[in-house]
Image (cartoon, rainbow, N blue to C red):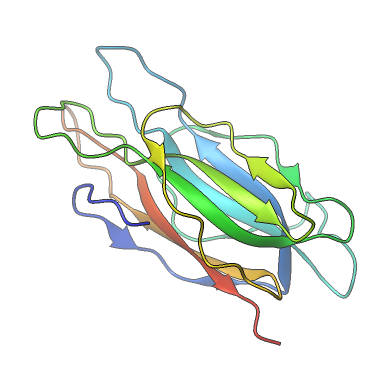
Length: 166
């Protein structure tokens, strides 16, 4: 699913062996007066040589916005791994003063489990991505750069997950 927020740029692609943990960087609702950005970043933790990645190891992360905090990571069940996603995006409204871009994500695990982020309820979830039969092995995010004081920022607007091929 693509959104249309601001001057967004695709970040670098980061790859790993196979992802089984999702973590998102979220800015909580700021109220009616302040600027909201909602989802600022996504990161994955991956398996290496048949073991689960430890949370103290470095995660796989593309570009992220500067606001918010990282949520508690969510795991697929033991032996399961990420295979797809659906992104919640606030639609652009011409009269809106505070566009947020992506506001939450759902991730599907290979055993059918659905992981849902701790994001905001604005916008609608898009279609599920085509499933990655061998799992997710990378991430790329599209983020609006910080625009400056008194301008509307949206941070993360889109993402791509890369399927494992081998």
